[in-house]
Length: 291
Ligand code: NAD
Picture 1 (cartoon, rainbow, N blue to C red):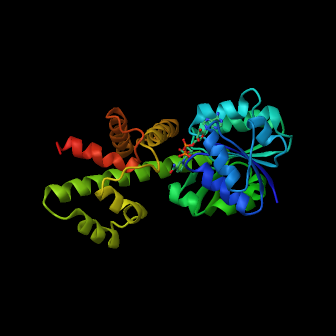
Picture 2: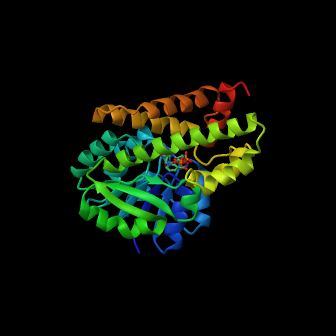
Picture 3: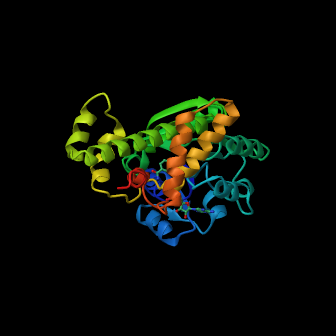
């Protein structure tokens, strides 16, 4: 049994914290939303009164927050993880943020003897609910080994991919592929429908051939039905495309398709679809086609 402080009980954090509690770990969780804290209590965890209360006695702290400003506030801010956790605590930031922030956090935390891993995830809400996430971890090998039993409760494909920040670079690569596939599935649907072909039947065939993908498997029915409830919001994917392009600049490489997909995602946000699921890229492609 590990004492876990869990900060950020949203779409992903709520099922992850529930799995950790169900596995017998002592989970103290905090979210600014009271209903999220109530859900943790009904899943067998303890609703903490704040970040400090959640992390003070923890051996492992997990953060699952929207972006780097929230992670910085929770980790570095007053009453935050660095101020409130015991020396020796392991902090696994499972949010998707910029690699350079993960590197900077690890440096700041080392001065307080707090060990940090960047451990972003892929698999979406379904992956979190089914405890089947992919977890890409950057940091020290010994810290990865220490955190592995906790990661194994929520994940299935778990890899140590390099030093601090490397987990976030792998996640950026993941997000550019996911965004690109959604964009192309959206284009396929628009082409099929505009040509008078039944899109559902067409995509069933695609899913069984070389074009098959997990996105087609999981999302083709909801896309054809125009069910864009999140899931993963366009706003968050917009953030992730920015991270991918910044990482490309840092690595001095050209990613032309990623640039194009980033503009599609930006258009979705500009059209007011930021709180819809990222499969709503279909609405953007439809609009571009005057449909
Ligand atoms: P979310 O917005 O549903 O959840 C974030 C939670 O953090 C919210 O409940 C919010 O109230 C809470 N929060 C914000 N600031 C806080 C603070 N200062 N203190 C305490 N709680 C605070 O987001 P999500 O979809 O769960 O995503 C979380 C992270 O995981 C993001 O970085 C996202 O990019 C990544 N991610 C999401 C998915 C997905 O499918 N939703 C998949 C993979 C990765």
